[in-house]
Amino acid sequence: MTEHFDANVVDEHILDEQRYDQHAYFEQIYARPVILESKKLTQVFQHDNVQRTILNQIDLKIHQREFICIIGPSGCGKSTLSRVVAGLDHFDSGEVLMDGSPIHGTSPERGMVFQGYTLFPWKTVKENVMFGPLMKGMSRTRAEEMAREWIHIIGLDKYENQYPHQLSGGMKQRVAIARALVNEPKILLMDEPFGALDPHTRQKMQKHLLDLWQNINITILFVTHDMDEAILLADRIVALKANPGEIKEIIEVNLPRPRTPELMQSDAFKQLKAHVNQLVHADDDAHDPAMDNLPEIPRMTHVSNTK
Ligand SMILES: Nc1ncnc2c1ncn2[C@@H]1O[C@H](COP(=O)(O)OP(=O)(O)O)[C@@H](O)[C@H]1O
Ligand SMILES: [Mg+2]
Image (cartoon, helix red, strand yellow):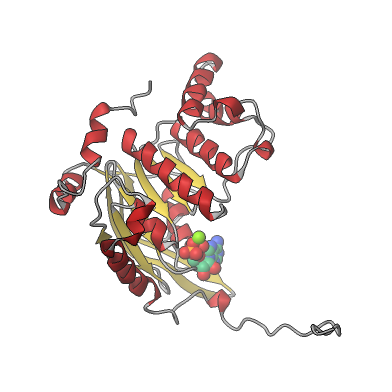
């Protein structure tokens, strides 16, 4: 098994309601090393000769094995932040540090599961997962062994020789997760990974991801605009505001783990959701300018709805 597995990881996370002590839980997290840090991270985009600050002075520290969710209204800069941290985009000023050192471009130590970052359609499930280890120079035999291990963990053994088009949306995202985890990343960056899934599959994927996270040594930065998803998954929720994208508040989610969808019915969950909702939608006028002045659609048909 990979060094990701550590029996001691499990107990620490599973805190039942009686034993749950929010203060102690977060003390434990903050005592762990900082894996990823952004310091005054700023990103400016130019569009039609107008400069817009998309991310403004983002200061964030993510600790080892922490589960962080970034939430905010559409267009506030969530994807920009994840792309910058992934090393896919340059940024204008500030710093992004991994284990204390500045990042340079993409790296397998920052695994990516993005909605638009899809599997290789011409490769089988196994070949997709083997890709990272092969790129690192591992032998085919070892790469195949590692791929099989991860395909087994995500429960897709029977599908290892299938192609992406033969899989459901949920399965594809499971393969995408395995493809990232096989590289033993220090952090997994996920940008709305379940956004295209139906609600039932989405719920199953959330549980699957929590199960993975609770049993392996991985830190997760997860972008979503879904408040239920953020509260269900996160240790801390980073609420961003738009124009410019700034951290509005960082919320410690004071709900015991393991968390199940039933938790959504609890008063504690509802209170937290009301708070997050108020943060995310407080300045709804500061939204994505691309959504301003939506044109009126001219009527192009003479067919009446009543005939
Ligand atoms: N490469 C780019 N060039 C110019 N503007 C961009 C670019 N990428 C994103 N933007 C703009 O930055 C803003 C934030 O985008 P994004 O990070 O995708 O938001 P979110 O993921 O929170 O919905 C949007 O207004 C978007 O139009
Ligand atoms: Mg986005």
